[in-house]
Length: 465
Ligand code: MN
Ligand code: MN
Image (tube, rainbow, N blue to C red; front, top):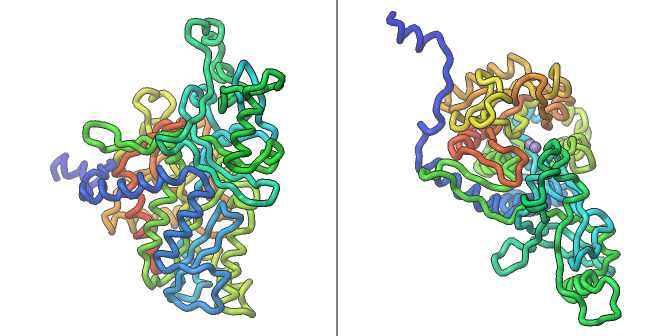
């Protein structure tokens, strides 16, 4: 054997995901860009998913009486998370093939009493959601998304600032000319949370006696247009997000810069692959969950029972008597991909990564045995048997993938939904697209990695035993 042959036979090297059909990669990315640009909150993603699923023959599980193999069902919860099933031919107790991802992203939420007037401007107080570098979120045009209920209980849904003829909103930052003291502070203190106040008005009421006339004029406009008053903010859920739509990056258009890749860049391929499933052997499931960015807590995060309840609903339709038992067996015997983004090696910051074990953009979807902090704290740490099964599956089906660990050990880390699904006893491993500038207002991904994640999801859903 020549040295080259030995090398090929014995050593491991990452493979380029750009070896796939270029046209297919680019076409798939267009669908993703449209989805991402039009759906910037968990509520919008759930609405979109249900609409798209219904067009593909999915039915609300609460409106069916019986199920048979091949049936397509969904169950949503509080308009912020959704579980979708394609019922398999096998007895469901043998397990399901499940892809779970999250559809919430870091952003700026409003406080409950947000509106005030300062220096001739109407301003909104925010409370940031998820992990952010605060200084990155100033001086950007922001759009307002979310819901406000008026006194009559009418729900007003907002996506204001997305169209060029609509106003946007803005957080000011200190001019460089006066920033000597600020620039000497650590980055964590350069901009602090209570400075993330959003300018939303400037014109005063034409009445010299009015106190806070800019604030009052802003409230007047809101009342005229939506029938709401200041008190209605108490129960509102408003999220401010970056305005820009997804754009191609580079002369070759190989990458996409956008708000909210984490984790819609995994939710989209997991969802779109499920839409194509017909008569699978094992029941296939896609979960789009909320609240991952703040620890999968709350009734719509994966630490809640909504997923278990959805499976229970399905198994009780299959067998009224044995439903609960079937659900337990189904969850325990499942194969799960906890689909979330990973960190790509960043050429500007190589010191944060251990380069032999970091994901690199363009080498395919990233399979991650463990996440967590420190000594794998908070991690699922997948079983060797299961990872081996997936490695073999991907290799046999020409899926380009790589492994990746988020940065150097003890430098930081991150969690995913993996441990919550593993708590049922299922086989779970993390997989997803590598991202550059994760949690920045605009993040960067490779189109080839997106396509590889879609192909991997499809092959995964088709696992037969
Ligand atoms: Mn994520
Ligand atoms: Mn995240």
